[in-house]
Length: 322
Image (cartoon, rainbow, N blue to C red):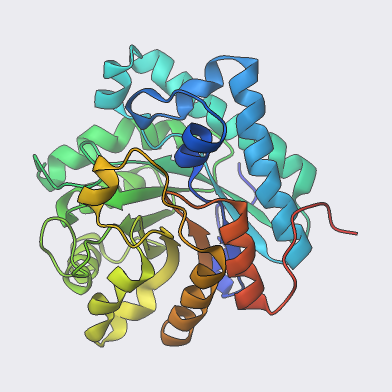
């Protein structure tokens, strides 16, 4: 059993860092080829595994230097049935890849976890379809059935929880929460937003969170938003209410570009790390419950170091703690 599954330490309110834009780092900075934007394929050989291990260890050292906790998400955003099949993975091989991803992060945790820097392992779930468009939508029951196998695989590993990222419409999120509950796995749901602060489906963020809680008995541990610039988040926050207390996480892009613009871009837009840290600090003053912070597309260790420095007031640096 994972050490933190029964009581996720990030729920106590202290700051937890997360990693950054794994796939864009691998593609644009390290020159890897990622078919269908899938990073889990790198688990197939030692060169890829070493790159993944080095990536995650960098954030473990950063968290240690800041005295924060750390949530590490497995490189499995595309490791679900449809995407796996497109990449030549049958159900058994896909389950093995999900287990291998957790095992890699368990090795990182064994080397870096301390009382001052607890490391939570989260099984990363991605959408069935495109993370930038709602597209073909499943009903809640279909979403439950679709994501159940991946969640069940994670439940048999050292993963402490699962997190569903870049959710574009509420029904898929609700189905994932139902499947997580069936497996007795803690779950976080992260919606993505367009430049107007609404989900790609057109739903308001407040409505998506309230509906998901209403239909699942508030089973989700907390909610997040990811893969958009902090300024795209601001229109959603115009609506007051207790739903905002359910928002604990932010993994934003440094780029101001819309999803459509990012989809068409052939060059990395990494924005300004210092400015991103300032924007996180401003949002934290509005959302004091926001304590799980990392990055998404186009971000790397520089951005997370800046975020950490602004939120802790300490000089952020990568490297082992003294």
